[in-house]
Length: 64
Image (tube, rainbow, N blue to C red; front, side, top):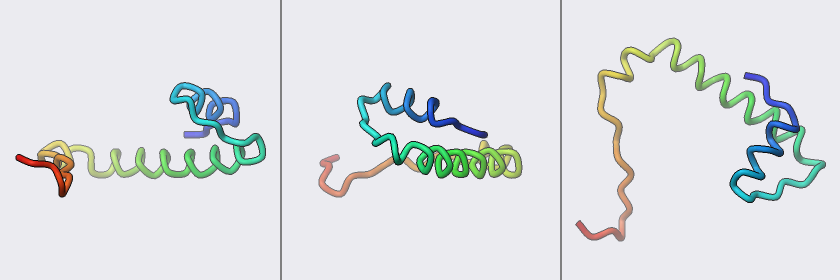
């Protein structure tokens, strides 16, 4: 998945995150790489991953 600087700018704007213009290319490259790897993992292990329940987040100070 290839993200552009405009894609990253729009994603950041959606969550009110300010990314300096000089950093947009680096963020786009790193996020594109991470998403591509996640896409490959899903392709390789998707069916196996669907057989397992996800682990819910547990916060150490949360009372149950």
